[in-house]
Image (cartoon, rainbow, N blue to C red; front, side):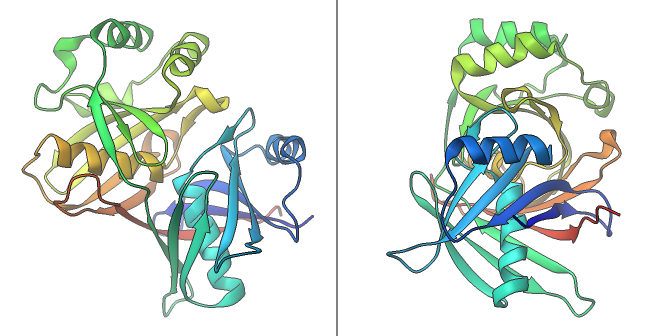
Length: 281
């Protein structure tokens, strides 16, 4: 089985979040896909099969320890792989529930950029008692959080918890108790806990704990980027509706995500990024 290894949301030809991409004639059994994802060792591997009854592709995503309903960076990687194989354009992707689209475009210097349109978004306040447990596991205090950004669950295909900190150092110092956080995430079916710091109305820095998938941290998280946009819309944030997220910097894997959203509540969010192919050599 040919497994493509592609880093999504790379920045200046470096970094990005590695994903496996597998094309098959038939969708493998879930157990086989989970085993392949473990062997690949990335936070997610995407499996694609041409849809038998519709125009597009059936896609499933597996982390090393679980299936994930939707994954942004693996979708970006899949979009680039589809563009490389079948040409630039927009491709429909059918999830376990619902569908998204991804488009691929090749630049003059040969670099592919992919853009996903997320599932619809929603957000809601997180219970105080639950948040207190999360903050304790991250050794964070409420006074270190940005008061203009309420602590909420946010959804764009999968569910995240968003915490906004007041300063860059707090973000850089992020650490947490893995097993405790993994259990807390399971309690609320969270895929990541997204910790953000706003540098300006057009630039956020982010770190995303991914204990739920058996990975300490994700260097670029497209689904969380879309969820953040939906969250900002829901809290009536007065910043830009097109912004950049820099992620992975503190891991030595710099990543850039370009996000755009409309004013319409719940509407799909656009998340774009460049990709680079990973060689085993």
